[in-house]
Image 1 (tube, helix red, strand yellow):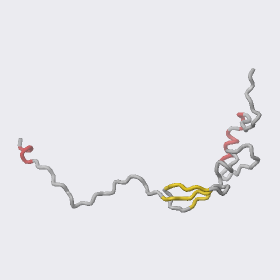
Image 2 (cartoon, rainbow, N blue to C red):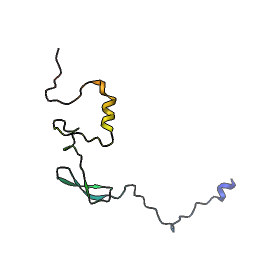
Image 3 (tube, one colour):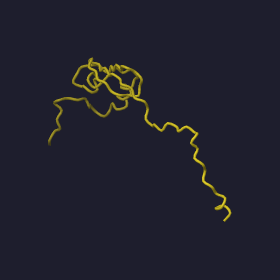
Length: 102
């Protein structure tokens, strides 16, 4: 066949620069400061040296229902949730809640 006789492989284009093949973003060493003052260091993609967290599992009332802290409803989300599920009963946490064995 004529096509088989005329076909020649392409020459390697060595003059072109090879693009970077890294798929992962750069990571920075960041110090995380919790609400109680304790801190730890992690690698994260945010280029900040320090991140201060005001709500975490140690201080948030939804994670610690035994404390008498008031929930800060900044965006109205808690009120919307309570309004949506108001007829489903009391789901508050109590150490004395036990299932009745009848």
